Length: 519
Image 1: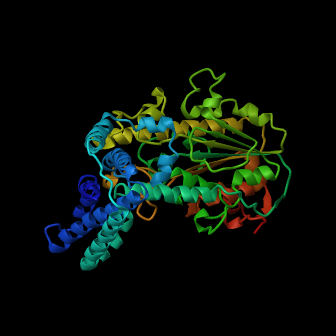
Image 2 (image 1 turned 135 degrees about the vertical axis):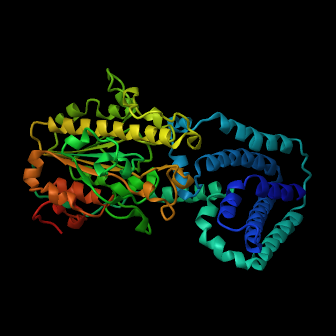
Image 3 (image 1 turned 180 degrees about the vertical axis):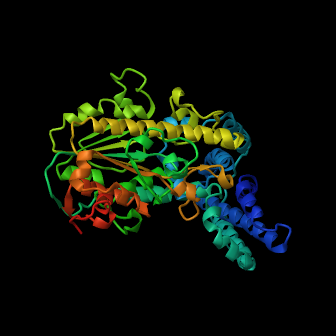
């Protein structure tokens, strides 16, 4: 029991610096109220830790030392990322962690992480290994857990004046308490994921207004923020090719989430997936495939939900047989794509390109050397060590490269011999570049700054497509509010699909036309 008490007290003292720093920055710590709030946070962390460790000891006392050692290592890693990038380890951030592949995980590596693991992880592990545990009767452990609960609740009741402040900041505080932030939120994320992966309920069938050959391409960007696109008035020429491509920039577009998994789910859903109480609904690629459309997905990313498509290829699968300067990064997504579209035996083709885009923190590694235009460039993953200028330069180069990739995709569609075609580009979420001490993305949507929520939304249409749909580009560009919810219904509209779940008010092509049918 003494070991449990000591570990609980040390955990509350050693690993909670971001928690106390957050509270201290928002209160007068020299006042009685401020000091009481800090004390309450310490007591809550200590008594929760002590209680849960005691309960674990009731299951198996032999597991206590390995459990505490694992907690020390994980706490050390979590502490590094919280202090380095200002992240919150809430449910959304744990979704990012789970869905990060090996290449992206390696891009986060820095020698300072090893220092954190050594000091805050390995040293406690060595000390724990030297301790001999003596078995304790389970009754005594149960009494200890009860005393910890009563003592903790007693303190909380006595410090009731702190409740209002803690409740107001609960979402931020909950993402900083180690180890409970990442353990509890990982369980919450995984539970939600299992629920989402259950057999999707089919959506109501739709019909086609025409059987004319049509190609629709959806490019899903990564971590691109609208305010760094020159198409939206940014001072730098980050979109030189798209500016002359005929693409229309749709204004005021908001993302439904600040991490890839949830945002991609929103892009592919006919409604807000967060509103569903049970089960899951058929997503756009599966829905189109079931209706006879040739659907293929190419990815240089991760976090994609379960779906049924004719073809799924990753960028590494496209490397074979690729020769030349366009066989790297997101350029690979276009390898052999024109031939693949032309060879389709279906009248309607839907292509999805899921970019790696501007995912940080290794922005400089996201672009070929020829796109390192804005200099000097931050090449460290410790973004707070970079100058603001070099960090923005590195990020802007990724936007410049995205401009190149999307413009290449447009030129590919332009070469399809007059086949009506259109391209939609939308980013999953935005990115923080040090504003208010935040970096990267994944901040809970209710707390996220605008730069993580405001995303670019572009549309390009071939001349034959515009004639068929009677699209007025000026009318389309005058739209004042857009979201990721537009994608599902706009793709349906592009393929002349009606009925089912089609909502005309969310179809940008219907908005850009003087008249159209549908509901």
